[in-house]
Amino acid sequence: MKKSVHVIGSGFSSIAAACYLAKAGYKTVVLEKNETIGGRARQFKKDGFLFDMGPTWYWMPDVFEKFFADFGKKPSDYYELEKLSPAYQVYFNTLDSITIPGSLKEIYEIFEQEEKGSSIHLKSFLKLAKYNYDVSINDLVYKPGVSPLELVTPATIGKITQFFSTIRKQVRKKIKSKKLIQILEFPVLFLGAKPSNTPAFYNFMNYADFGLGTWHPKGGMFEVIEGMISLAHSLNVQFKTSAEVEEIYVNSFGEAQGLVVNGNFVSSDIILSGADYHHTETLLPKKYKQYSEKYWEKRVFAPSSLLFYVGFDKKLENVCHHTLFFDTDFDVHAKTIYDAPSWPKEPLFYASFPSINDGSFAPTNKEVGTFLIPLAPGIEDTVEIREHYFNIIIERFEKLTNQSVKDHIVFKESFCVNDFVKDYNSYKGNAYGLANILTQTAFLRPKIKSKKVKNLFFTGQLTVPGPGVPPSLISGKIASDLILKHHKNETII
Image 1 (cartoon, rainbow, N blue to C red):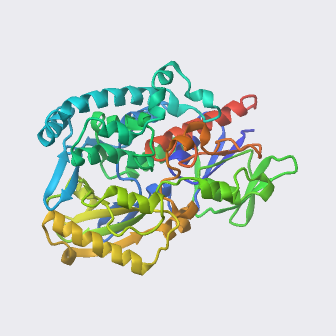
Image 2: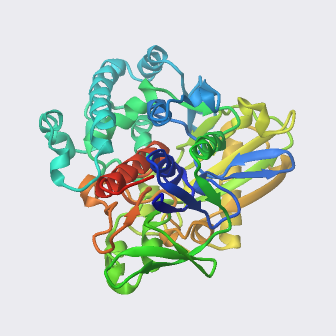
Image 3: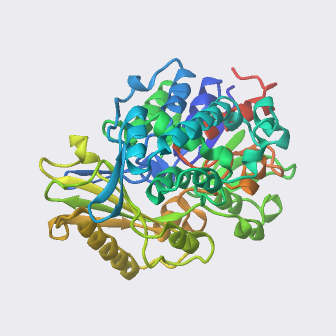
């Protein structure tokens, strides 16, 4: 009889792990508390407008290729990719922006126009970033975070100083233009931490940005989820929606033996949670929790977000598919996220307008826009506060891009801290998991295998390797590998 695995949650890491486990011969069932699959990568549709509710950036295409290749497939078997050129645009003041093109040659030219000699430094910086990317993606990020020795390789020993320096120091060593500095420091936001707290080794994100480029799956990021679901179905993975896990049952020998789902007991040989790690441990008897409330309170979390999903009745001007608004002080905003949790007075924000490149997102001659303000998790969230901040950013948006848009809004919906808690059981409503700072890297993150409960494992953004879509795919593989390692002597028919 096949051994059974129940996977809690249906985000990228959960579906990835489910595919690997089903391929290995396990009877695999994915349980999703919401009505639709995808976790944070769900879709929202209204009046002919389409929104990716969560991730909108497709970086590190090689990670997606590796995932599908493990099953003898390619991304193109499931969705169509387009490389964006321009990749994105960054605003600094009214009609004052830098547009990042789709090729390195053009990027060097843009840097040189902004600061003479900067392209020379950029080439040197990216050479190191590419080396770090190759080391990370081909080796380090696929480690299970069990031992500090995982980080000790011939490649990392020679670069050890990078773990004790920061992205900020590395970027500002030679580049003087404030605009170029902000462009080079922004990819760290995908790691959920300040540039001043992120080890210099993580500059591999800059290679992911400039070297590999920004891509767009036609139809949006949910097309990737649908591709993974299709792959999972071909491997006989079962998906059950509106299936809320209320308890993890642990027997007197400390073995997880099943779950209570919607009030009913479901037997399971192995449980893998891709849901929020903190929430998952609340489903256990207190003595089986690995991490106390005090532990979680002391962690440095990546931001939460205030998101607005907006439909416009006209095409917008002076913006790109991905547009960042850095016209206010990032360090001041960052303090309200990491140092003194509060609402920022002058927030930076990001906007995505996929209908610029992809007609499936909006009706003809209309535009779809997703606006995002990064926030500290756990802060007060009310309808009035959301409306206040929408007015702040939309007025700045109009000024910076020199166009009127407020009177052209067909509708808007918001999503913030309270929604992250309600929809994803997210600790304090965080959106991205734990920040990738030195003291929360690799073996210092919450463990994939429970130390107290046999047959219980974890995957996703709160464990290794960290936040982001590519790391989530990798986390699913790491978790499945660890399960197979610890159950390698089981007979699976």
